[in-house]
Length: 531
Image (cartoon, rainbow, N blue to C red; front, side, top):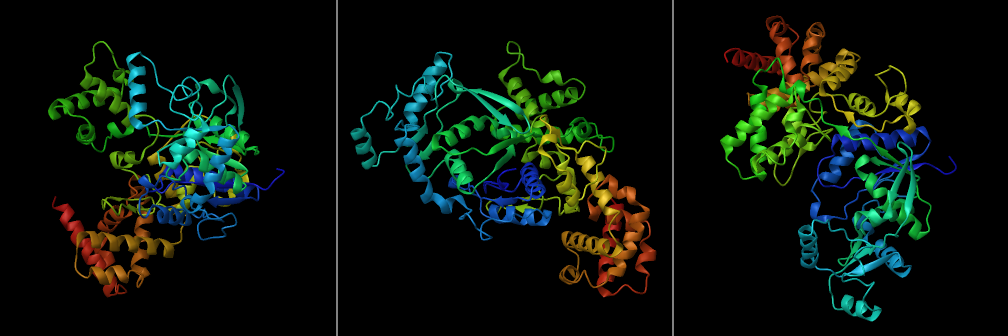
């Protein structure tokens, strides 16, 4: 490659880092390291209305835990800083003005009410309203208003936006490293908003300006951004800049729902889905609860063997049925979402997340007993392989073998059970001392959850005696299938210790902290055995 490879991960701090975002960060990291380049992190927080306190720190902590920390980011090697977009706000006005002056953009003064009226008029005529070359000279824009009038309205504090003036009658032939040649018709594109009168740019303008100023060589991002590619390439053309190379990663899809709805170990699983889906559905729809529950149960029982049952019959289906079918389709199929973890019982975040506003808590892979190497390994194989049957890769091996041309176009299905298998492969590689430390930590967490005596002492001193952990680990190795079947380490410890509890608690080397831990564990076992 002729110039240095510089790639970025550019999340918005609107909540915890979803596992799909982690994969995007990972692929950027691997590509940079493979090509002796730089992987940097930029925080894209131009939309302050969606800012979530703690999200930025969470992103940093998650990448550190996974071992893919950026070389440049906020407060670290800020060669092209600032690396937080809200700290760069003063930069963007000049670039918006440049587009206005060169004829690539225009002012639009349309009020929300006026735009809403246009949309309703189009709907009444059976059309879709798109703000583009068809109507931009019929609306309240600088394309039909004199320069003096525009200046007066801006000076009077009237709200406006700056929109991109998309070229007419052009076919864009663009190249994507993963998808090959992609084609877009400019007449079908809308004139996106680039800048607002409050002085803040939209994502599109800030993203292109920052990528150029930070010398980004490749933009590696999710498939959902593919529709933005023509606008971004046109913006580079408008500024007279060389565009980076683009690679759009495949979606991470929801897991096979059949394994969840037909769980042999839990014959009542489908009922729990019915209750959960009914609750979620009625949060946004006003229908009879019992009728909704019955319909959802009917479709969930049928969809396992016949997905076509969710096809909508425009003539026969009631509004209620149409809404339910649409809801279930979105819930069971398509892109993996943040809510899928809660619904299906597996983490979708790398580390635990606590929303400071709502106090809602979501467990991450770290707290579920997964090794960071496991998460890196299974994410790398979601959409990529090296052309062999190899499944276990160290980070160093991934760097050596990674190639964007071997990333698939089709979506990659998430598999929580296979992820547990990956974790087991890393589990058996650990030495006893390391495992003892991990298992004792989880014992302390169990006891803290149960609210037993000496919680503080146990939680603060779980490192004191690793011999106890070594004994538990030896038992765990003899019953390793338990860990494969359920990766909740605390629950597995209960099962493992239950089989040999007396032998462990009679050991003379167990000190007072270990004794407290085991007594609490025994109490938990006895409590569960009475249920």
